[in-house]
Figure 1 (cartoon, helix red, strand yellow):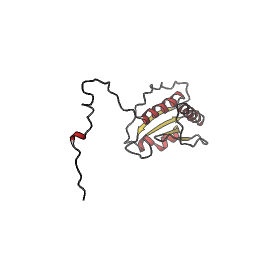
Figure 2 (tube, one colour):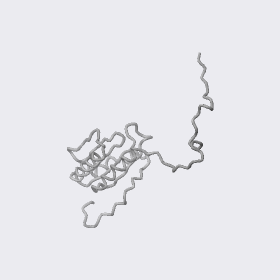
Figure 3 (cartoon, helix red, strand yellow):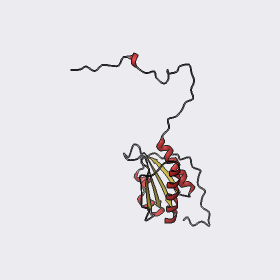
Figure 4 (cartoon, rainbow, N blue to C red):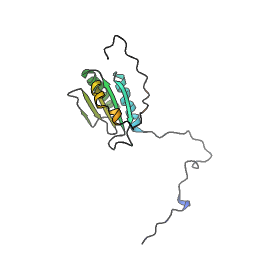
Length: 158
């Protein structure tokens, strides 16, 4: 029976702390492509006036996505405008969704970007399904978006 052997210390690679000792390098943070993608998606939605933009980090909760991006709109026309703008903007950046569901009804559109799932809801449907509560254990993601201005009294957002 073969015996498992411990690697000798001479075969170890130098640790990041000792590698290149004596030289200073700027610390870099690992790039999370899915986080970059969810921020791009959120920015595109924000640019088209999507409401209640929220991203959840679901890497420890789901096995089919890393992030959920939840968006609201007040009308079916606004949902259509948001998903078409998001899809077009992302295509320009080299990202194509695997599938887009619900675009014929424009009440709840789901866009599957592999590691990011985008849900665009009419406000009443978002309130009904409460995905924020369903995935309440998932941390919220800082999307780096400016704070939305409160609606004016003349607005029909209510």
